[in-house]
Length: 303
Length: 253
Image (cartoon, rainbow over all chains, first blue to last red):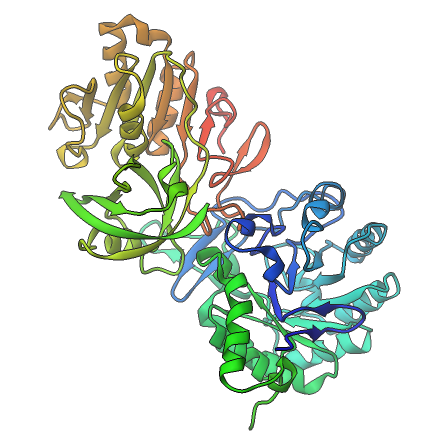
Protein backbone atom coordinates (compact mmCIF):
# COMPACT_ATOMS: atom_id res chain seq x y z
CA UNK A 1 0.00 0.00 0.00
CA UNK A 2 1.40 3.36 -1.00
CA UNK A 3 0.77 5.69 1.92
CA UNK A 4 3.22 8.41 0.89
CA UNK A 5 1.81 11.88 0.67
CA UNK A 6 3.54 14.86 -0.89
CA UNK A 7 2.98 18.25 0.70
CA UNK A 8 5.25 19.99 -1.80
CA UNK A 9 8.68 21.60 -1.79
CA UNK A 10 10.41 18.47 -0.56
CA UNK A 11 8.06 17.67 2.31
CA UNK A 12 7.24 14.09 1.42
CA UNK A 13 5.61 12.16 4.27
CA UNK A 14 5.74 8.36 4.51
CA UNK A 15 2.14 8.47 5.66
CA UNK A 16 -0.42 11.26 6.26
CA UNK A 17 -0.39 11.09 10.09
CA UNK A 18 1.04 14.15 11.82
CA UNK A 19 0.93 15.18 15.48
CA UNK A 20 -0.45 18.70 15.90
CA UNK A 21 1.50 21.52 17.44
CA UNK A 22 0.99 22.05 21.16
CA UNK A 23 -0.39 18.57 21.76
CA UNK A 24 2.83 16.62 21.46
CA UNK A 25 5.53 18.89 22.94
CA UNK A 26 8.68 17.88 21.02
CA UNK A 27 7.55 14.31 20.47
CA UNK A 28 9.76 12.45 22.89
CA UNK A 29 7.05 11.64 25.47
CA UNK A 30 5.30 9.45 22.88
CA UNK A 31 8.23 7.06 22.63
CA UNK A 32 6.70 5.20 25.59
CA UNK A 33 3.52 4.53 23.61
CA UNK A 34 4.67 3.59 20.07
CA UNK A 35 7.75 3.71 17.85
CA UNK A 36 7.91 7.31 16.64
CA UNK A 37 8.95 6.06 13.21
CA UNK A 38 5.30 5.19 12.62
CA UNK A 39 4.50 8.90 12.28
CA UNK A 40 4.48 10.81 9.01
CA UNK A 41 5.49 13.99 10.78
CA UNK A 42 5.66 15.79 14.08
CA UNK A 43 4.72 19.44 14.33
CA UNK A 44 6.58 20.84 17.31
CA UNK A 45 5.21 23.02 20.05
CA UNK A 46 5.34 26.66 18.90
CA UNK A 47 8.90 27.97 18.99
CA UNK A 48 9.68 31.68 19.37
CA UNK A 49 13.02 33.46 19.15
CA UNK A 50 13.08 34.12 22.93
CA UNK A 51 11.71 31.81 25.64
CA UNK A 52 8.06 32.36 26.64
CA UNK A 53 6.77 31.57 30.15
CA UNK A 54 3.15 31.20 29.11
CA UNK A 55 -0.08 32.14 30.83
CA UNK A 56 -1.11 31.85 34.50
CA UNK A 57 -3.00 28.72 35.64
CA UNK A 58 -5.64 27.36 35.38
CA UNK A 59 -4.73 26.91 31.75
CA UNK A 60 -6.94 23.95 30.93
CA UNK A 61 -10.51 22.88 31.54
CA UNK A 62 -12.69 20.15 30.14
CA UNK A 63 -16.03 21.19 28.64
CA UNK A 64 -18.81 19.31 26.90
CA UNK A 65 -17.28 17.36 24.04
CA UNK A 66 -13.93 19.05 24.28
CA UNK A 67 -11.58 21.18 26.28
CA UNK A 68 -10.39 24.76 26.50
CA UNK A 69 -6.70 25.61 26.77
CA UNK A 70 -4.82 28.79 27.34
CA UNK A 71 -1.17 27.76 27.57
CA UNK A 72 0.17 30.91 25.97
CA UNK A 73 2.92 29.34 23.84
CA UNK A 74 5.22 28.41 26.71
CA UNK A 75 8.46 27.31 25.05
CA UNK A 76 12.20 27.39 25.74
CA UNK A 77 13.07 29.59 22.76
CA UNK A 78 14.80 28.85 19.44
CA UNK A 79 18.31 28.41 20.83
CA UNK A 80 17.40 25.72 23.35
CA UNK A 81 15.20 24.10 20.70
CA UNK A 82 18.09 23.85 18.25
CA UNK A 83 20.75 22.85 20.76
CA UNK A 84 18.84 20.46 23.02
CA UNK A 85 15.57 19.33 21.47
CA UNK A 86 16.20 19.10 17.74
CA UNK A 87 19.04 16.56 18.16
CA UNK A 88 16.63 14.32 20.12
CA UNK A 89 13.97 14.63 17.41
CA UNK A 90 16.51 13.87 14.68
CA UNK A 91 17.30 10.47 16.15
CA UNK A 92 13.98 9.39 14.64
CA UNK A 93 12.88 8.94 11.07
CA UNK A 94 9.88 11.22 10.56
CA UNK A 95 9.49 14.69 9.12
CA UNK A 96 10.04 17.48 11.63
CA UNK A 97 7.90 20.54 11.02
CA UNK A 98 8.68 23.40 13.41
CA UNK A 99 5.74 25.54 14.43
CA UNK A 100 7.02 29.12 14.52
CA UNK A 101 5.57 32.05 16.40
CA UNK A 102 6.33 35.73 16.92
CA UNK A 103 4.64 38.63 18.65
CA UNK A 104 5.27 40.77 15.54
CA UNK A 105 6.60 40.53 11.96
CA UNK A 106 10.07 40.93 13.45
CA UNK A 107 9.53 38.05 15.87
CA UNK A 108 8.41 35.67 13.12
CA UNK A 109 11.25 36.72 10.81
CA UNK A 110 13.86 36.34 13.55
CA UNK A 111 12.83 32.84 14.55
CA UNK A 112 12.78 31.62 10.94
CA UNK A 113 16.15 33.26 10.20
CA UNK A 114 17.60 31.62 13.31
CA UNK A 115 16.21 28.18 12.45
CA UNK A 116 17.43 28.46 8.84
CA UNK A 117 20.97 28.00 10.18
CA UNK A 118 20.15 24.51 11.50
CA UNK A 119 20.03 21.22 9.64
CA UNK A 120 17.30 18.69 10.21
CA UNK A 121 14.22 20.87 9.91
CA UNK A 122 11.88 19.71 7.15
CA UNK A 123 9.55 22.68 7.16
CA UNK A 124 7.82 25.40 9.14
CA UNK A 125 4.24 25.74 10.23
CA UNK A 126 3.52 29.44 10.70
CA UNK A 127 1.32 29.94 13.74
CA UNK A 128 -1.00 32.81 12.88
CA UNK A 129 -3.88 31.33 14.81
CA UNK A 130 -2.99 30.96 18.50
CA UNK A 131 -5.83 32.65 20.44
CA UNK A 132 -3.96 32.78 23.76
CA UNK A 133 -1.56 35.70 23.24
CA UNK A 134 -2.08 39.45 23.20
CA UNK A 135 0.07 40.02 20.12
CA UNK A 136 0.90 37.82 17.17
CA UNK A 137 -0.94 34.57 16.49
CA UNK A 138 -4.64 35.11 15.87
CA UNK A 139 -4.06 38.84 15.31
CA UNK A 140 -2.49 37.84 11.99
CA UNK A 141 -4.86 34.99 11.29
CA UNK A 142 -7.95 37.19 11.41
CA UNK A 143 -6.60 39.88 9.08
CA UNK A 144 -5.99 38.81 5.46
CA UNK A 145 -3.61 41.69 4.69
CA UNK A 146 -1.42 40.85 7.69
CA UNK A 147 -1.55 37.16 6.74
CA UNK A 148 -0.43 37.93 3.20
CA UNK A 149 2.35 40.29 4.30
CA UNK A 150 3.78 37.88 6.87
CA UNK A 151 3.71 34.84 4.60
CA UNK A 152 5.42 36.83 1.82
CA UNK A 153 8.12 38.02 4.26
CA UNK A 154 8.78 34.47 5.48
CA UNK A 155 8.67 33.04 1.95
CA UNK A 156 11.57 35.30 0.97
CA UNK A 157 13.59 33.97 3.93
CA UNK A 158 13.36 30.22 3.41
CA UNK A 159 13.41 27.58 0.73
CA UNK A 160 12.05 25.06 3.17
CA UNK A 161 8.43 23.97 3.15
CA UNK A 162 6.20 26.75 4.46
CA UNK A 163 2.87 25.64 5.95
CA UNK A 164 0.46 28.20 7.39
CA UNK A 165 -1.93 27.22 10.20
CA UNK A 166 -5.25 29.01 9.97
CA UNK A 167 -7.75 30.05 12.60
CA UNK A 168 -11.42 29.04 12.33
CA UNK A 169 -12.43 32.29 14.05
CA UNK A 170 -13.13 34.11 10.78
CA UNK A 171 -16.17 34.64 8.58
CA UNK A 172 -14.62 33.60 5.28
CA UNK A 173 -11.83 31.05 5.63
CA UNK A 174 -11.25 30.97 1.87
CA UNK A 175 -10.10 34.59 1.87
CA UNK A 176 -7.25 33.61 4.22
CA UNK A 177 -6.37 30.46 2.32
CA UNK A 178 -6.14 32.43 -0.92
CA UNK A 179 -3.95 35.08 0.77
CA UNK A 180 -1.55 32.33 1.90
CA UNK A 181 -1.40 30.72 -1.52
CA UNK A 182 -0.81 34.04 -3.29
CA UNK A 183 1.95 34.96 -0.83
CA UNK A 184 3.84 31.75 -1.57
CA UNK A 185 2.79 29.26 1.12
CA UNK A 186 3.39 25.61 0.21
CA UNK A 187 0.49 24.23 2.24
CA UNK A 188 -2.27 25.23 4.61
CA UNK A 189 -3.14 23.48 7.87
CA UNK A 190 -6.48 24.06 9.55
CA UNK A 191 -8.15 24.45 11.95
CA UNK A 192 -6.53 25.82 15.08
CA UNK A 193 -8.81 26.11 18.14
CA UNK A 194 -12.12 27.94 18.27
CA UNK A 195 -12.30 30.77 20.79
CA UNK A 196 -14.25 29.52 23.78
CA UNK A 197 -15.09 30.17 27.40
CA UNK A 198 -16.15 28.28 30.51
CA UNK A 199 -17.38 29.74 33.82
CA UNK A 200 -18.16 28.41 37.29
CA UNK A 201 -21.62 29.41 38.56
CA UNK A 202 -20.70 28.64 42.19
CA UNK A 203 -17.63 30.88 42.35
CA UNK A 204 -18.79 33.22 39.53
CA UNK A 205 -15.32 33.03 38.09
CA UNK A 206 -13.98 32.00 34.68
CA UNK A 207 -12.50 28.50 34.65
CA UNK A 208 -9.46 29.71 32.68
CA UNK A 209 -7.20 32.34 34.24
CA UNK A 210 -7.07 34.34 31.01
CA UNK A 211 -10.91 34.11 30.81
CA UNK A 212 -11.12 32.89 27.19
CA UNK A 213 -9.13 30.17 25.50
CA UNK A 214 -8.94 27.79 22.57
CA UNK A 215 -11.71 25.18 22.32
CA UNK A 216 -10.70 21.83 20.82
CA UNK A 217 -11.71 18.18 20.82
CA UNK A 218 -14.19 15.89 19.06
CA UNK A 219 -17.02 18.44 19.12
CA UNK A 220 -15.22 20.83 16.73
CA UNK A 221 -14.87 18.22 13.99
CA UNK A 222 -17.89 19.23 11.88
CA UNK A 223 -16.71 22.86 11.80
CA UNK A 224 -13.18 21.79 10.91
CA UNK A 225 -14.35 19.35 8.25
CA UNK A 226 -16.45 22.03 6.57
CA UNK A 227 -13.54 24.49 6.52
CA UNK A 228 -11.06 21.92 5.19
CA UNK A 229 -13.55 21.04 2.44
CA UNK A 230 -14.00 24.72 1.50
CA UNK A 231 -10.28 25.45 1.48
CA UNK A 232 -9.31 22.30 -0.44
CA UNK A 233 -11.74 23.36 -3.18
CA UNK A 234 -10.48 26.92 -3.45
CA UNK A 235 -6.68 26.57 -3.43
CA UNK A 236 -4.34 24.34 -5.41
CA UNK A 237 -1.74 23.82 -2.67
CA UNK A 238 -2.09 20.88 -0.24
CA UNK A 239 -4.35 21.21 2.78
CA UNK A 240 -3.73 19.50 6.11
CA UNK A 241 -6.88 18.67 8.11
CA UNK A 242 -7.00 19.25 11.87
CA UNK A 243 -9.90 19.28 14.30
CA UNK A 244 -11.27 16.65 16.65
CA UNK A 245 -9.67 13.61 15.02
CA UNK A 246 -9.81 10.65 17.43
CA UNK A 247 -10.32 7.61 15.18
CA UNK A 248 -9.36 6.22 11.79
CA UNK A 249 -12.85 7.11 10.60
CA UNK A 250 -12.29 10.76 11.50
CA UNK A 251 -8.95 10.79 9.67
CA UNK A 252 -10.53 9.20 6.58
CA UNK A 253 -13.25 11.86 6.58
CA UNK A 254 -10.73 14.72 6.40
CA UNK A 255 -8.79 12.95 3.64
CA UNK A 256 -12.04 12.28 1.76
CA UNK A 257 -13.00 15.97 1.67
CA UNK A 258 -9.61 16.88 0.25
CA UNK A 259 -6.96 16.96 2.98
CA UNK A 260 -3.57 15.64 1.81
CA UNK A 261 -2.55 14.85 5.40
CA UNK A 262 -4.08 15.10 8.86
CA UNK A 263 -2.95 16.23 12.30
CA UNK A 264 -4.04 14.61 15.55
CA UNK A 265 -4.36 17.11 18.37
CA UNK A 266 -6.37 16.89 21.58
CA UNK A 267 -6.73 13.09 21.28
CA UNK A 268 -3.00 12.80 22.02
CA UNK A 269 -3.81 13.86 25.59
CA UNK A 270 -6.34 11.14 26.38
CA UNK A 271 -5.22 8.47 23.92
CA UNK A 272 -1.44 8.86 23.58
CA UNK A 273 -1.14 5.75 21.40
CA UNK A 274 -3.36 7.21 18.68
CA UNK A 275 -0.62 8.52 16.37
CA UNK A 276 1.01 5.14 15.89
CA UNK A 277 -2.30 3.32 15.72
CA UNK A 278 -3.81 5.59 13.04
CA UNK A 279 -0.92 4.95 10.67
CA UNK A 280 -1.62 1.19 10.87
CA UNK A 281 -5.39 1.49 10.80
CA UNK A 282 -5.41 3.70 7.70
CA UNK A 283 -3.55 1.03 5.73
CA UNK A 284 -5.85 -1.70 7.02
CA UNK A 285 -9.00 0.24 6.18
CA UNK A 286 -7.89 1.15 2.66
CA UNK A 287 -6.80 -2.45 2.04
CA UNK A 288 -10.12 -3.80 3.25
CA UNK A 289 -11.92 -1.48 0.87
CA UNK A 290 -9.80 -2.39 -2.14
CA UNK A 291 -8.25 1.06 -2.47
CA UNK A 292 -4.73 0.79 -3.89
CA UNK A 293 -3.17 4.01 -2.72
CA UNK A 294 -3.86 6.91 -0.42
CA UNK A 295 -3.94 9.24 -3.42
CA UNK A 296 -7.02 7.44 -4.75
CA UNK A 297 -8.86 8.24 -1.53
CA UNK A 298 -7.81 11.86 -1.03
CA UNK A 299 -10.50 14.25 -2.26
CA UNK A 300 -12.68 11.49 -3.65
CA UNK A 301 -15.86 12.83 -2.05
CA UNK A 302 -18.87 12.58 -4.32
CA UNK A 303 -21.15 15.57 -3.92
CA UNK B 1 4.79 5.09 31.27
CA UNK B 2 2.25 2.88 29.54
CA UNK B 3 -1.27 2.89 28.21
CA UNK B 4 -2.81 -0.14 29.93
CA UNK B 5 -6.00 -1.89 30.97
CA UNK B 6 -7.05 -2.22 34.60
CA UNK B 7 -9.68 -4.68 35.85
CA UNK B 8 -11.70 -3.79 38.92
CA UNK B 9 -11.47 -6.65 41.39
CA UNK B 10 -12.98 -5.14 44.50
CA UNK B 11 -14.53 -1.95 45.82
CA UNK B 12 -15.13 -0.67 49.33
CA UNK B 13 -16.93 2.58 50.14
CA UNK B 14 -16.88 4.95 53.09
CA UNK B 15 -19.35 7.86 52.73
CA UNK B 16 -18.19 9.76 49.58
CA UNK B 17 -14.93 7.83 49.29
CA UNK B 18 -14.32 4.54 47.52
CA UNK B 19 -11.29 2.30 47.54
CA UNK B 20 -10.90 0.60 44.20
CA UNK B 21 -8.67 -2.43 43.83
CA UNK B 22 -7.64 -3.15 40.25
CA UNK B 23 -5.69 -6.01 38.74
CA UNK B 24 -3.01 -5.64 36.09
CA UNK B 25 -0.12 -7.72 34.83
CA UNK B 26 1.81 -4.71 33.54
CA UNK B 27 5.18 -4.79 35.32
CA UNK B 28 5.86 -1.07 34.78
CA UNK B 29 2.55 -0.25 36.46
CA UNK B 30 3.36 -2.45 39.45
CA UNK B 31 6.74 -0.73 39.91
CA UNK B 32 4.88 2.39 41.05
CA UNK B 33 6.22 4.34 44.05
CA UNK B 34 4.49 6.52 46.67
CA UNK B 35 3.55 9.90 45.18
CA UNK B 36 3.08 8.58 41.65
CA UNK B 37 -0.31 8.52 39.97
CA UNK B 38 -2.23 7.13 37.02
CA UNK B 39 -4.51 8.91 34.59
CA UNK B 40 -7.75 6.91 34.80
CA UNK B 41 -10.48 6.76 32.20
CA UNK B 42 -13.56 8.32 33.80
CA UNK B 43 -16.23 8.63 31.07
CA UNK B 44 -14.96 12.17 30.53
CA UNK B 45 -12.89 13.25 27.54
CA UNK B 46 -9.69 13.75 29.54
CA UNK B 47 -8.51 11.07 31.93
CA UNK B 48 -8.30 11.97 35.63
CA UNK B 49 -5.09 11.94 37.69
CA UNK B 50 -5.53 9.62 40.70
CA UNK B 51 -2.66 8.83 43.02
CA UNK B 52 -1.86 5.28 44.08
CA UNK B 53 -2.95 4.10 47.54
CA UNK B 54 -1.20 0.75 47.54
CA UNK B 55 0.37 -1.85 45.29
CA UNK B 56 1.03 -5.56 45.59
CA UNK B 57 3.25 -6.68 42.75
CA UNK B 58 2.87 -10.38 43.55
CA UNK B 59 -0.91 -10.43 43.22
CA UNK B 60 -0.84 -7.68 40.55
CA UNK B 61 -3.09 -5.40 42.57
CA UNK B 62 -3.20 -1.60 42.40
CA UNK B 63 -5.39 0.35 44.80
CA UNK B 64 -6.77 3.88 44.43
CA UNK B 65 -8.81 6.06 46.73
CA UNK B 66 -11.52 8.07 44.96
CA UNK B 67 -13.38 10.98 46.50
CA UNK B 68 -16.68 11.62 44.71
CA UNK B 69 -16.53 15.28 43.68
CA UNK B 70 -17.26 15.82 39.99
CA UNK B 71 -18.46 13.87 36.97
CA UNK B 72 -15.27 11.83 36.50
CA UNK B 73 -14.81 10.87 40.14
CA UNK B 74 -18.50 9.97 40.45
CA UNK B 75 -18.13 7.60 37.50
CA UNK B 76 -15.15 5.96 39.22
CA UNK B 77 -16.99 5.80 42.57
CA UNK B 78 -19.91 4.01 40.93
CA UNK B 79 -17.81 1.38 39.13
CA UNK B 80 -18.68 -2.25 39.84
CA UNK B 81 -16.26 -5.14 40.19
CA UNK B 82 -15.58 -6.65 36.77
CA UNK B 83 -15.31 -3.25 35.10
CA UNK B 84 -12.37 -2.58 32.78
CA UNK B 85 -10.67 0.80 32.51
CA UNK B 86 -7.96 2.30 30.34
CA UNK B 87 -5.21 4.03 32.27
CA UNK B 88 -1.98 5.86 31.53
CA UNK B 89 0.91 5.64 33.94
CA UNK B 90 2.58 5.39 36.28
CA UNK B 91 3.33 9.10 36.05
CA UNK B 92 5.25 11.54 38.17
CA UNK B 93 8.21 11.48 40.51
CA UNK B 94 7.90 10.01 43.99
CA UNK B 95 8.58 11.12 47.54
CA UNK B 96 12.31 10.83 48.26
CA UNK B 97 13.64 7.92 50.29
CA UNK B 98 14.08 9.12 53.90
CA UNK B 99 16.90 6.55 54.27
CA UNK B 100 15.94 5.68 57.81
CA UNK B 101 15.51 9.27 59.04
CA UNK B 102 12.30 10.00 60.99
CA UNK B 103 9.48 11.27 58.78
CA UNK B 104 6.09 12.78 59.48
CA UNK B 105 3.43 11.79 56.97
CA UNK B 106 0.63 14.37 56.83
CA UNK B 107 -2.41 13.61 54.69
CA UNK B 108 -5.52 15.75 54.40
CA UNK B 109 -8.78 14.19 53.18
CA UNK B 110 -8.33 12.57 49.79
CA UNK B 111 -4.62 13.47 50.00
CA UNK B 112 -4.00 10.45 52.19
CA UNK B 113 -3.06 7.84 49.50
CA UNK B 114 0.69 8.52 49.20
CA UNK B 115 0.95 8.66 53.00
CA UNK B 116 -0.76 5.30 53.38
CA UNK B 117 1.46 3.88 50.61
CA UNK B 118 4.58 5.20 52.44
CA UNK B 119 3.39 3.75 55.75
CA UNK B 120 3.32 0.33 54.05
CA UNK B 121 6.96 0.43 52.98
CA UNK B 122 8.89 2.64 55.42
CA UNK B 123 10.69 0.89 58.31
CA UNK B 124 8.58 0.69 61.47
CA UNK B 125 9.28 3.29 64.16
CA UNK B 126 10.75 5.79 61.65
CA UNK B 127 7.45 7.42 60.74
CA UNK B 128 4.22 8.75 62.17
CA UNK B 129 1.08 9.47 60.16
CA UNK B 130 -1.27 12.41 60.71
CA UNK B 131 -4.58 12.09 58.91
CA UNK B 132 -6.84 15.15 58.93
CA UNK B 133 -10.35 15.88 57.73
CA UNK B 134 -13.32 18.13 58.37
CA UNK B 135 -15.21 15.33 60.08
CA UNK B 136 -15.58 11.59 60.53
CA UNK B 137 -16.84 11.06 56.97
CA UNK B 138 -13.50 12.30 55.59
CA UNK B 139 -11.45 9.80 57.54
CA UNK B 140 -11.41 6.42 55.84
CA UNK B 141 -10.54 3.60 58.25
CA UNK B 142 -7.31 2.67 56.48
CA UNK B 143 -4.81 2.39 59.27
CA UNK B 144 -4.58 -0.60 61.58
CA UNK B 145 -3.49 -0.32 65.19
CA UNK B 146 0.08 -1.37 64.38
CA UNK B 147 0.60 1.72 62.21
CA UNK B 148 1.45 4.79 64.32
CA UNK B 149 -1.11 7.37 63.26
CA UNK B 150 -3.06 10.25 64.67
CA UNK B 151 -6.39 11.43 63.36
CA UNK B 152 -7.51 15.05 63.50
CA UNK B 153 -10.90 16.48 62.56
CA UNK B 154 -12.01 20.10 62.41
CA UNK B 155 -15.29 19.28 64.20
CA UNK B 156 -13.80 16.82 66.67
CA UNK B 157 -16.09 13.99 65.51
CA UNK B 158 -13.07 11.67 65.36
CA UNK B 159 -9.61 11.83 66.92
CA UNK B 160 -8.10 15.09 68.00
CA UNK B 161 -10.21 18.22 67.44
CA UNK B 162 -8.17 20.54 65.25
CA UNK B 163 -5.95 20.42 62.20
CA UNK B 164 -2.95 18.31 61.18
CA UNK B 165 -0.72 21.07 62.61
CA UNK B 166 -2.08 20.31 66.07
CA UNK B 167 -1.64 16.59 65.41
CA UNK B 168 2.03 17.06 64.52
CA UNK B 169 2.67 19.21 67.62
CA UNK B 170 1.27 16.39 69.73
CA UNK B 171 3.44 13.78 68.02
CA UNK B 172 6.55 15.95 68.51
CA UNK B 173 5.74 16.30 72.19
CA UNK B 174 5.24 12.57 72.64
CA UNK B 175 8.31 11.54 70.63
CA UNK B 176 11.06 14.18 70.30
CA UNK B 177 12.75 12.33 67.40
CA UNK B 178 10.04 13.88 65.19
CA UNK B 179 11.02 17.47 66.11
CA UNK B 180 13.63 17.34 63.38
CA UNK B 181 11.87 14.88 61.10
CA UNK B 182 11.31 15.14 57.39
CA UNK B 183 7.78 16.27 56.62
CA UNK B 184 5.89 14.70 53.71
CA UNK B 185 2.44 16.09 52.96
CA UNK B 186 -0.44 15.78 50.55
CA UNK B 187 -3.75 17.57 50.86
CA UNK B 188 -5.59 20.82 50.19
CA UNK B 189 -3.22 23.73 49.53
CA UNK B 190 -4.36 25.74 52.62
CA UNK B 191 -3.39 22.74 54.77
CA UNK B 192 0.03 22.41 53.16
CA UNK B 193 0.68 26.15 53.45
CA UNK B 194 -0.37 26.06 57.11
CA UNK B 195 2.20 23.29 57.63
CA UNK B 196 4.97 25.35 56.00
CA UNK B 197 4.12 28.28 58.26
CA UNK B 198 3.87 26.20 61.43
CA UNK B 199 7.05 24.19 60.79
CA UNK B 200 9.37 26.35 58.67
CA UNK B 201 12.39 24.52 60.07
CA UNK B 202 11.36 21.12 58.68
CA UNK B 203 12.54 19.81 55.33
CA UNK B 204 9.11 19.54 53.75
CA UNK B 205 8.10 17.73 50.55
CA UNK B 206 4.55 17.99 49.30
CA UNK B 207 2.60 16.35 46.52
CA UNK B 208 0.66 18.95 44.52
CA UNK B 209 -2.75 18.45 43.02
CA UNK B 210 -3.50 20.17 39.72
CA UNK B 211 -5.99 20.00 36.90
CA UNK B 212 -4.22 18.00 34.19
CA UNK B 213 -4.84 17.62 30.48
CA UNK B 214 -2.56 14.72 29.64
CA UNK B 215 -0.65 13.65 32.78
CA UNK B 216 2.52 12.75 30.87
CA UNK B 217 4.17 16.06 30.17
CA UNK B 218 2.98 17.33 26.79
CA UNK B 219 0.06 19.71 27.35
CA UNK B 220 1.72 22.16 29.78
CA UNK B 221 -1.62 22.66 31.54
CA UNK B 222 -0.51 21.79 35.08
CA UNK B 223 2.57 23.96 35.44
CA UNK B 224 3.75 25.55 38.69
CA UNK B 225 6.31 28.30 39.25
CA UNK B 226 9.31 27.17 41.24
CA UNK B 227 12.61 28.80 42.17
CA UNK B 228 14.09 26.63 39.39
CA UNK B 229 11.67 27.93 36.76
CA UNK B 230 8.32 26.69 35.50
CA UNK B 231 7.79 22.99 36.14
CA UNK B 232 5.15 20.50 35.05
CA UNK B 233 3.35 19.04 38.08
CA UNK B 234 2.63 15.80 36.19
CA UNK B 235 6.18 14.73 35.33
CA UNK B 236 8.58 17.11 37.12
CA UNK B 237 6.36 16.64 40.23
CA UNK B 238 3.88 16.08 41.71
CA UNK B 239 6.30 15.98 44.67
CA UNK B 240 8.18 19.23 45.28
CA UNK B 241 10.20 20.58 48.15
CA UNK B 242 8.15 23.45 49.57
CA UNK B 243 11.30 25.63 49.54
CA UNK B 244 11.43 25.22 45.75
CA UNK B 245 7.81 26.32 45.55
CA UNK B 246 8.72 29.49 47.43
CA UNK B 247 6.10 28.63 50.05
CA UNK B 248 8.53 28.97 52.92
CA UNK B 249 9.10 32.64 52.29
CA UNK B 250 5.65 33.96 51.65
CA UNK B 251 5.41 33.76 47.84
CA UNK B 252 2.28 32.45 46.15
CA UNK B 253 2.41 30.32 43.01
